[in-house]
Figure: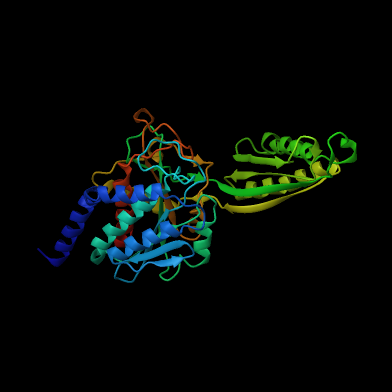
Length: 410
């Protein structure tokens, strides 16, 4: 057998057994996942989570680096092209209501499955380190904070996650519970699918406080807030192209401290989600106008302050086709591609991995993590949401396999 044939044989054996290798480490994947689940942290500050990830990476032989509260490591001994894989690490400010033995007790919860993502990334790191001599380039591992607040990916991009070595392509994965698919099924959402841009906003209203018995002596910001809330709904109902998509959600409304006082100020906050950049700018322009003019009509003042957000997440068409081919080679892993049934999924949920996707070719995959009839009947962000751990080896194997195959082919 020639050296070329031997190399091909080794790589074919590796391709055939990558999922089996991940399956063999399921106990380790599960232990990591349960540690993260029991110790959730929020936002940009994840000291315990990041320290655990660093410790495990060092045990594997990596030299991890901090990037803010994110963690970065690189696999591969050969220079050349670089493929990035990403897992988000943060939880939600949700009090857990499951009966899991490893449930969180600190008032926060991994209700979106990021504990699974982080465990999958550690699993992929183990697989890549075990096959590091076979990597035809480098794989950058991006352990990201603050996906839920849309701050983490932007922070890491601004701090150079895509540089040194320069990233050429990227893969993100998200687990989804409460789906009618066997746990571990990989979901390709269609080459034309998108995840929405999001903009968080706060509307601050200033009136004139007074005694509740003498409203004529003041300007009631609660009344103004109510009219603004109703007026904003007209953007979607009467100003949007019916073929376009937009969601404007008010999630908070606050004002006043007691029953017989008209307060001086009130506030409301929410999110805008859009699938087109032009729609995104139009909605923000109309919000500014409606908020200020409605307030002025009632002799009050109001303005919109925009906070965190992210752009639309698109798939790279060419990379999407390549990833589909790689998944077809991964024995033991099943996937569905909505393109094959003439569909695609445009999700009004948002994902700040879009900051990476706007810079380099990117594909974002889903993995089913629990069927309703098996007890996984609560969706993401619900206090009773649970995620099937059979999805863990699939995530680890897909991360590693796609990265390795892309490097081999480029």
